[in-house]
Every structure is written in C-alpha cells, then in structure tokens.
Amino acid sequence: MKLGPLIPGFALLLATTQTSEARPKNIKNVNEKGEEYHAQPGKYFHESSFHVHYDGRFASHPIVDQDEQRHAIKVLVQTYLATFRDLGIETWLMHGTLLGWWWNKQILPWDTDADVMISEPSIYRLAAYYNMTTYYFEYPAVPNGRTFQLEVNPHYTIREDSDRLNVVDARWIDMENGLFIDITTASYDLDHPEGEGVLVCKDGHQFRDTYLFPLLDTTFEGVEVKIPFKYKEMLESEYGEEALTRKKFHGHVFDDIKMEWAPLHEENSEL
Image (cartoon, rainbow, N blue to C red; front, top):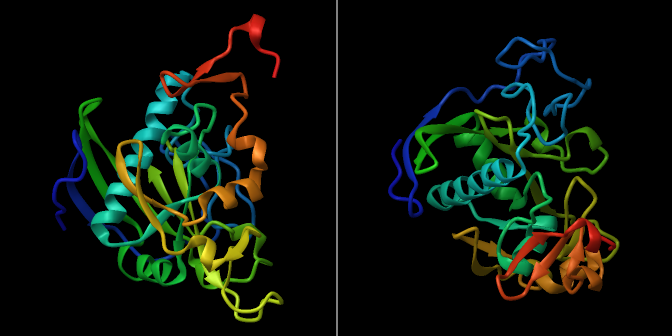
C-alpha cells in the first residue's frame, strides 16, 4: 500500500499489515531489549514501568532532553494526522492538545502526549482494515526514517464506561522511542438521561453532538486537522475560563510577540 505526499519534508514510503489478531494471552510484556515492563490483568494497552506515556515494548527509558522529546511528540502528531487524512479516517483534537491549538496551534511544551478522538464507525473501520499496520516515514531530522504502528484495542466493541481498564480504543505508536497517541472514540448514548444527541467516551467525557459538529478545518503543528465546532465552550467546560487566558503556567510564560510558550526564569517563576 502506497500513499502520496503527506506534508512538506515527509515521505510515507510503505504501509504494511502485520496482523489483526489480539495480543496472545499470558505473554510476558517485554521490550526489544528483553526487559519486562508493567502489565495489568484485563488491560490491553500496557504503559511502561518508567513513564505512563511510553509503550514498554519499544522503549526501556524516556527521552531525557526536553527539546528532543517535544520534537518527537510533534513528529508523532504530524505523522498521525497525515496518515489518517490519507486513509480517510476523520479525527479531531481534544483535551490538552486542543488547548495547545487554542494558544498557538502547537503542542503545549510540558505535554508528553497528545489527545485525539474519532467516531464509532471509524474505530470499526480501523479494526477491520488497519489494525497492526505499520507506516514508514522519512523526514529531514531522521534521514534513515522511522516506523509507526497503528494498533486497535480488541475491547473497542465494549462501549460502556464500566470497562475502565480499556478506555483507550487505539494507539498510534512510534516504534523507535515508544511514545504514543491515545485514540478514543465518541459514541452516541441512545439511552442518555439528557435525551438524544449525546456523545460519550469510555473515559467518562460526554457532550452534545452540536458542540462537536460540524467539525472545523484548521492546522496544528503545520498539518491539516479538524477541531470541535464549539471548541471554546468545550475547553472552558473541561479546564475553566482561566486556562484560555492565563499566560503563566507550568513553569512557562506565553510570549504574545513570538506566539510561543517560553520557560520562566527562576526569579520570575511564581505562578
């Protein structure tokens, strides 16, 4: 399977299907170095023992350098968005990643992950046709290329929020460093006490479809992306109005001229 040009500086050379079967039971969770990592019975996706935003199968330690990690997350987001666009899978930004878009259309510098969402028909399509497919990208910072894996949680068919161990329906994983993007699904709750038109996720988030649709077209980290129709109201509901105006947070200050978050100096670090 070959896809055309994605974004400037990127080339997707190959996409191969490995297998659509669920992970075998009773298998030891080990990374490529043979080191075991944390596993929880009944949970499909297992985070590493050293950091919750790394997959221990592909990494034995986190990226120490903050700039390097931020770049790795940026590439993770860019490749995810470009691939889903070419596959025709509609996805949109949510939570902290949407908040990063609000400020300067970039990942918040203190974030170590990204939050995206898809619809229920889309997760079924991913499971049927793209589970365990891998995608190889070449780009200037990594001329030798890097491979990413799209993996679907077999528990995606359970839409009730009682399945707390499997709230993540799929992941986009960097197979070199173990960083990943959690993909959650928005499903209609036909029996919701608030009536029709309520979308719910297994992680407990719920909202009316009029807040989400029609999705708006924009860009994020230089790549085309979609965001909820009432993005401001959704952000205020989740983080409070102050999160959209407070310019000092998490050891950073927002520079209105450069349109970026800059680290605060120690003498000015009171938040």
